[in-house]
Every structure is written in structure tokens, then in C-alpha cells.
Image 1 (cartoon, rainbow, N blue to C red):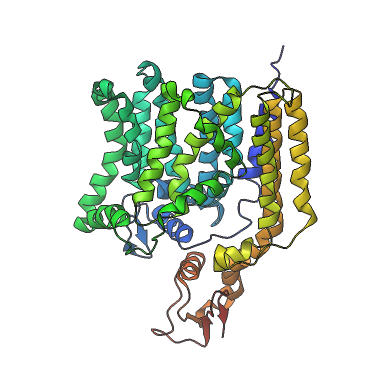
Image 2: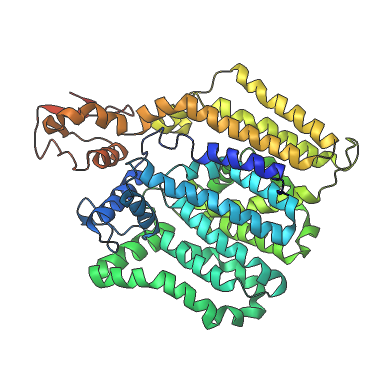
Length: 487
């Protein structure tokens, strides 16, 4: 007799496809980083040199090589210029969620695992970074998998997963260099067992994964590789504002709340001190808080830096939600958890509210984007909140959580369908290149913003010349924050 597919799995699979793979190429590559990383990967695939990252002919050592290998392999199998940089990241996103469910089921039970997977898989930060070919999601997936595999050792000194955890930490180093090693400091909670971490069967997998590329790249490129990767872009990012990303100390508090939307209200459930008598939950909490402190101390701050803290937060929120009483009577102790889930449902309003202003926020910055005008779709989260209240009343907490997750998925699909054309126009150079590709030999570039310059270079393959170096009949110019245009 065939085994019945669990209802949660039957919902999770199509939801994951819609969130991570549906219209993955609806918007061209955006920002300064995504086209640069994709250009490096494409050059690796073309040249067959998988050691030295090169950007338009010159060595580029700002980041390690894992993302370039992933995207380069996608170019090699024939994926196009928009899917090759993004599909490997989306696949890693979905694969990590399967692992996340498995390890949390093993440690905290099936319902807590489903709650955590739906929370993480549908939070805004996880979805957004799964759609772009940057290093934030690869380092988050590899580092978080390593930390989660340490849970059995933290709880019971069970060491069989430590070699795999060490190998994954090595991949995290290949994704973003030294920060994953610093973020792994919560392992010291079990300092009395430190000898377990120094056994050859644990150290060797990390060295085998992380060391060879660093050694080979140094041998081929010399001191400039070490100075750029470590001195300038590791220690320099932490201590100096020379790279242009300084932010106030409290920057990451609203950022984390935004990354966790619509689930941010569940953070209030982490305040119970008694819950942290469990070493596994204490480990997750220290992972979250230490990472927040570490990135807060850094001079340079970007939203994607704290993405590796989100899986720990989602797991803590899910376990707290799973343990909260649920007797089905609104007047008893279950009302707090019901109220927070209702708040999560109401927070879904962020999707219809953000959709019309998102293109302006991308083009000019969130602070300069206009306030959203009221639209009837703002009332839809009220219906979700009513459904949550009814399901909680029937002691169906997982179903209530899935309903909010489905609302988040619907919000993201609405955003993709509605905002994608305008986002492609104001945020990506793909449409600009399609406009000028037929007469590229007549065009030169006159001092346009770097995110447009990098994107244009990516889609043109051979960068267009600067007008100051080679004047041509048509000049590509830019005024203010508007997209560049031909003169």
C-alpha cells in the first residue's frame, strides 16, 4: 500500500517551486555585485581556469570562489545569462530547507521542524536572497548546516556528524572567507569537550575543503591575493569605512525585523529564560546574539551580512511556538501564541504595500521612495488573520502557520507578477542592453553609475568604451537616479 504524502509536504513542494523557481529570470541581474560575480563565473567557464577569479581580464580577489564555481558550472551546462548565476543559489536554498527540516525533526520533533521550515522558507530575507546570484545565501546555507550538525554534539556529545560539519564550514569559508569562522564561536559553549574538535577526522575535512584553493590561488597570484582578500576585504571591512558602507550601531535591529517578515512578531517568544536550560536552544540563541553583536561591531554594514543569523532565529521561534499551550479556548494561556500568529498574518500587508514603491526604492533608496497609496489588497491579510484565529481555536497550530506561510508566498508571487517589469527597467541593465545591442559599435559610456556600468558590461560581454577614451556618435549618459539613456 502506497504511503500517503503528509499534507505539510504536499503544500511545501509547490510553495517552494513558486517562491524560488517561478520567473527566476523575470528581472535582469541587479546591483553592482550580481553582474560582477556572474561575469567572473562566466569567464571561469569560458577559460577553464577555476583558480583565479578574473573580472574583464584582471584578477578579482574580493571574495572566495564557491559562488563562482556554482555559477560557472551552470554556464558550462548551457544555462543563459540570467539563470546561470541564480539557479544554483535557488537550488541550494531549497536543498538547505530539506536538510533544515531533517536536522530539526531529529532534535526537536516533527511539528517543530515543519514550523521552522515554513517560517524560514517564507521569510522575506530568505526569499529575496534566494533570487540573486550573490554570496549571502551560499555562506548562510553552508555555515548554518555546519552549526546545525553540531547540535547533537552540543546536546549529547554525539560526534558522528562533526566531520561533515567541519567540511561544510570549509565550504562556508570558500563562500565568504573568515566571517564564518568567527560566527562559529558559539561552539565554545562546550569548551570542556574541545578535544573532540581537534581530532584528525574533524580537522582534516575542513582543511581538505578550505585550503587547496587558497594555496593554489596564492601560488598563482602572489601577495596581491592575500592583501586584497584578507587585509582589505576581511579586516578592512570590519575596521575601516573606506569601502563606503558605514551604518549606525542599531542598523541591524530593523534589518533583522525586515528579513524575518512576516514572522518578526514571533521574536517575542524568545524571551523565556527557562527555555534555555536546554543546551541546544541556548546554542541557537548564542549563535543569533553573538552574530548580531559581531556584525554590529563592524564598521561596514550591509543587510545581507546578517542572513546567517536567520536560520537560528527561525528555529528558536518555531520551537517556542510549538511548546506554547494550545487548548483551543481563546481565554486561556494559548492566547499569546494566537495573538502573535495573528500579528504575523497582519504583517503580510507589507507585500501589497511594498509592491508599488519597490521600483523607486531600488532606484533611489528606501528613504527617498514615496509613501505607498492605500489599496484594497491591504485588507487581504485581515482574512488570513481570521483564518489563523479559527484554526488556533481548533488546536490546528501547524495549519495556522501554513496559512500565514501561504499568504507570504502569495504576496511574493503578487510582487513578482506586478513589480517585475518596472524593477527590470529601473534596476537592471538587461533592458538597456537590449535597446542598444544592435548599434553597440556606435555607443560609448559617459560616467554612469557603477551598478549600471557593471550590469551593462555583463550583458555586452565586451565592455563598451568610455567616451573620454574613445568618442563615438552615441553617448550613454545618466542624470540623477534615472536609468541611463542615449544622446
